[in-house]
Length: 276
Ligand SMILES: [Zn+2]
Image (cartoon, rainbow, N blue to C red; front, top):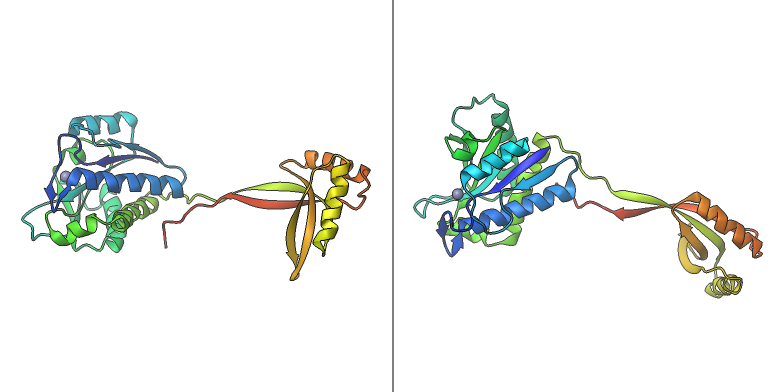
């Protein structure tokens, strides 16, 4: 799934402003968090952004880029402004689209997930003839994440935890709409050569010294079996069984005839879940 992610405005175009905030900066902060959270937690997704810094880019450039890339979805991030008293969240698809269209179905899903977590008044799902919705060749959604000139909404925009929650709402919607697979924990098997297990640490140290005198490095680890602590002398850990077997022969030739190999699964990276 190829996501074209578009933080609205930027550079010389500040977008709306109010309460000491520029819309372009809030949009970018949310979008960067969407990108990072999405890529950290899901597979089968690529993200291209219209901008990752405070740079100027025309609307035409943005839709041209998404179309040329062949994006599957165009997601534009904005904040609103009106008269200071209006507040809340709303999102838009293009005015010509039927409620039964795929784009409208994606809107339903993202709207549900975003409004679940964004702590904003829900102003509903809307349609408009915006450039990015009209000129993009793929389903497109524009989200208006609060009113920057409203003190309640702007106060939320100043909080990192709110920016992250809003990003996660978007990510959860994308994951559901495009059926993205969550990243699995990565693990690897390690083959460990064990040259003795002892209840007393000094016995383990004695064994390690014995091996060292015969040119075999080892270290002492601990393992608890049925509530009993053991000191385990490990004479190497290998990612292939062949290498472990080779070391095992060396250890046995050094006189530790009851040495053996254990397989252990090691988690090398666990994904952080954004869904709870
Ligand atoms: Zn805007």
